[in-house]
Amino acid sequence: MRTLCVGEALVDLVCERPVASISEADAFVPRFGGAIANVAVTAARRGADVALAGGVGTDAWGAWLHERLQDEGVDLTWFDRREDVVTPVAFVTLDADAQPSFAIYGAGVRAAILGLGERLVEAVDACDALFFSSNTLVDEDERAITLAARDRALRDGKPVILDPNLRLERWRSRSAAVEVVGPCVQGAFLVKCNADEALALTGELEVEAAAASLVAAGAKHVVVTLGADGALLRGGGLDRDAPGVPARPVDATGAGDAVTGVLISALARTGFYPAALAAMLPDAMAQAARATERYGALD
Image (cartoon, rainbow, N blue to C red; front, side, top):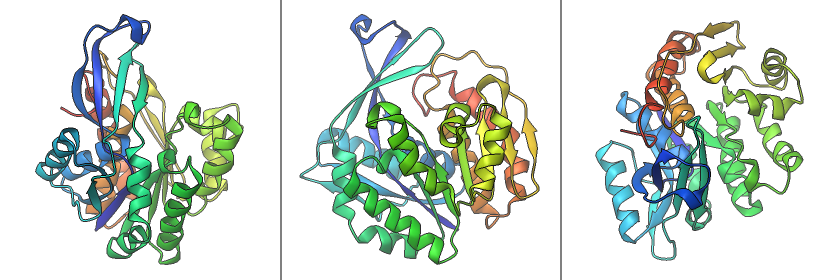
């Protein structure tokens, strides 16, 4: 089954040492980045058939990303290289706890999605499942195209995977983000989020209650990651808890993307058999732990 991943590929310029602020950074190393592209590559490496819908510029960084995606076996039928797009870059700094901060330059992701227009719905028709995040929901016009793709997938009974990936600094307010992203939970085959996102989307005070609320809101299955404490799976009679895996983290940027990529690959390879989530969640947590021990989301 081919899964269509909608969203960004970008260049992460990573300061490979902990700093208190970007003003302390003295060097940056280019790394492959973009949450959706990270997921697509992770899933492809594990044998899944995945396509990425989005785009980059015709500049040198765009060529670098495009070549990497091709080499990783990601289907680029709906991934454009556009002369009117400047490939976005993100300056990434890490604190003493390996938590990243991003300063993103360039609006290439938005322009690429808008450039796809109705082709995005055509891409949904050509694929068997859809994965998206809030990254393409912030701006109204980009949101309309993304939600049209979601509606098409749901109409045709195709599995939809949502990773809220709430970067609240991109939104007008926390409530604005929840107002847009919250309704996307309904009908989702899988909502994968971290604890803070689960609490924000539901207004609950405890993670267990938040997971239950997401299922009650219409998600068939919910995976909530808990950092070093592992993850929990709820919904569809698949209540599972996966322990955390010991790690020596230097960069947590790609941990959540690793989880999503592993789970999508397991679902795609089994025809979206729900029990694959329970079977592969421990492996997903192991991959997330390993991802934190290197700089950049992918090795």
